Length: 125
Image (cartoon, rainbow, N blue to C red; front, side):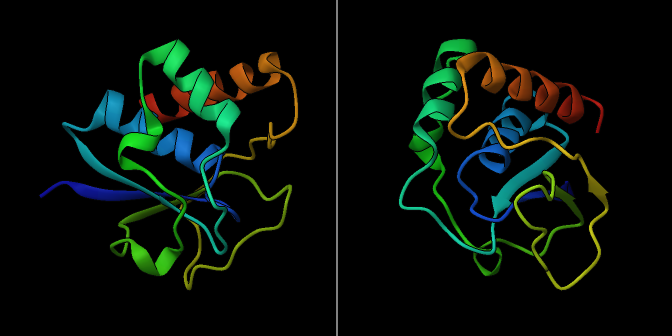
């Protein structure tokens, strides 16, 4: 049985969604990937959606949406995206914290840098 990996951030609208999408894109043969937050947003960050489509041909809005931790299976591995906007409490310690800056509201170059960092981290799981 494949291990369940969850990427967690506060709003589940940007970094964690990117990580879920890249995990499924590159490593779905080894793990099941999820993302969640302690709060939700009405939609996934539209800059993230646009850039993931441009860079990888991934439509994040096809199967993903902003959701809270109680809406996903209990993960075997929980990874925090970074606590620069507050560290969510998920009922257990995080297995890792990637300390990624939140690119929301920043330039495409900032977004792409974070996306590429997430890709490297996902591939090293």
